[in-house]
Length: 366
Image (cartoon, rainbow, N blue to C red; front, side, top):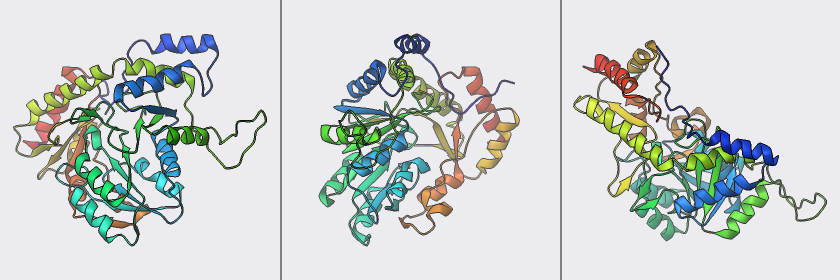
């Protein structure tokens, strides 16, 4: 049987046309009309004033931390239940991550956030809050807590482009935010990311740092060090085409979730990731937990019939790399990791493919 992937790229049809225009112009380097168009399209869609196309979302987080003044020994709060790319940049800056566990939403707990701020040995500079699997965090509470404490907030919206809360797009709530366009994301350019902010000076500084921190002289003059973090015009052309169908992709992801919910929702063994009130997630991946069934049994059963699935993220505070990190946790994300599963959620899946997945899960759980 054909393999069913977790979330494979889904092209719109215009990507090759736009790439051909790039090759015709010969602007294939990290500059060109499509980089400008891609940045403008993300800015217009999200309602965030300024956008910077980059090589990855992780590079965007690195630039954000540097722009916000995070340095050696500083404390950076972060969601623990996430992918390591959300917090790698903290280490790049020789700063100290302070991990905050999840609540019933699966995303960062505002109550544990307050505890972390109150009990950290010194005041953290920044919070990196992840919108997990395309579902919005409780940004009203989180922003209120951090504003009162004088802490910058960066949204890791890598998985949540197209999600909204109170009618506002993911990324609009904080000081800076990043999106990812990796191969499995809702919008894919094969690799890449975007840093966004309403602060023009911050984005200008990030752009300067992303292009090797070259001073505006004819020769190469450097007063500080930078990085080679810009996106190529070729990948940006793919992004422009993908942005034209983003709303359609979000609707398809949500339809996939509803298909699974209808097919599996009556099984008492299974619980789906919730959606907080007045939010609309992009449902990047449909994710579930089991009360008693070992998720590894389900993964093995799916793999036996050529279907890809994955465990939920292993929390950062449980990773060997962060064994000594300060953590404020109550076991929530550990339980989710131990009981959870990501289901195939590609927008190019057929109903027949979705039914194949459901039949295997029913066979194991019922």
